[in-house]
Image (cartoon, rainbow, N blue to C red; front, side):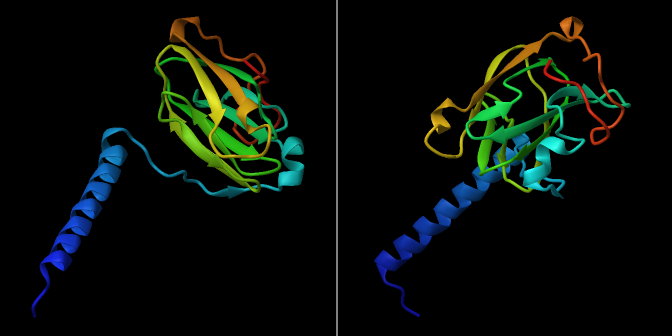
Length: 178
């Protein structure tokens, strides 16, 4: 079968572009730990602020000593608006929305997830000490540009466990802003 020169150029070009795309995807997955959100969990968006997991947003430590953050997105704010976390410690974020789709991005880190009403998004990451911006990177309405929060990461020795911590991520009220 005879294939025209221009068709061969386009076929090779498409093949190279696909190889670059999949190579970039593999690099991000293995080298930087970028992965799609997992642990699909549903929640009634109208009852988010009454649910045990999101009644009080903020930082808490479970019975095993793992650090968690519960946060809720709503037009045009993150609850809580400020967080303090320990450096070089895995932190699991549990996120949901009460109204529209939001994008939770901790700028300059690999902490990022889409926050969809009716679902609880979850990811785990760790940070170096410093101040970080938490931004909404999914257009959510006219006040989208104002939707931001602050994350302060302090050295482990300076971090204090929230006083009203609970034993499990989904049980009872957990720590308020820290």
